[in-house]
Length: 464
Picture 1 (spheres, rainbow, N blue to C red):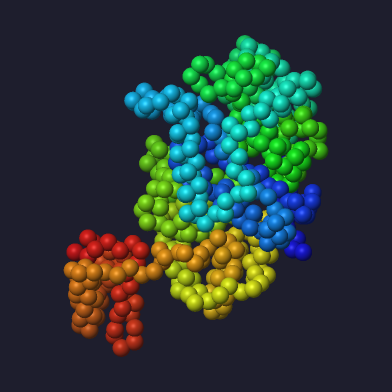
Picture 2 (picture 1 turned 120 degrees about the horizontal axis):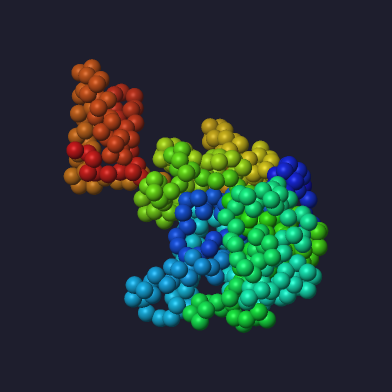
């Protein structure tokens, strides 16, 4: 059996992954808070853990691997979005508008993530479906002295759990000094975090021993993972931005409730994403959603390729140049595998790279080698293993220029041929540049002939 090595944030080292049960490998990944469209940074963990899911299924068998990715559908940001819609005149109660918004956003998210070639998880739990389990866990924590009720709230007592901070490597004093800690009169310690909070008449709420209210963010994942996978499971993943406080708090409340050996055995985090060398920000004008890219006719397959080109443990930079290069590579690969059937066995080197802490850049380098060798069957199998080269992909097929645009392309090609014949290479290069800007690739052939290839980026308005 293939040996898998993964970097464990909790131990700060890469080690051999040994499932608790090879017949029941379980992975939980923190999903989105569903109040708006997923941005390109949100797509990175989805793709990273989709690759891990594919690897686990390849090694242990599809029927022996279970993957859960949750939806946080009860949250103050969601409430605020619904309230703004109500204020703008939307019909319905606030609770109805919240339900409408979360349903809408979850549908968007699933559609966008599928467009990137991701397999749907086995479980997609919504927080609102597990309120009873959250209330029960809170009661257990109170009973064991790790939580307390105060003014309609339930709070986790951080100083009751001696290993708090182990995941992020921070001391409680450092956390207090470096964090925006909510100061509240009902807290015994500034670092104590909310497990349950009261709801007003309009805000979503559920009856509990502490009054009508709703769960805090952190308890949601602990309760859902416990219900779906039991008190011990194999892998917990998410973006590095979740390591503290979210994952730190999950560990504290779950282990305080169920014992030090409980909860996830391996913790994995992907690094963050930048755009053109800068942090993504609406104020910088470089913030965009997955749907924005898809609407610009950048294929989901191209987006996936770009994100796989950097190791998940390193910061990655999204650039238009990378997207263009990815599209060019994928177009060539698609042309090579046309009519081929995938090899029965996955290329060993591709599997070895991915099994080595998800080394997707190494795997893509091997795909380049397979393409260069002309091994279409092996390339197709390896590409599909990585979520690329899908049979239903059509974006890469050359577009046809019609009508006046086709005549203009032909005229420019002929003008370039004449310029080359007259040895006016500056003019020939300028025409080639004009065609390229319009999304037309010029392929020179023997005998002075040239072929125009209409690409995905074709824009007849730029032909002049």
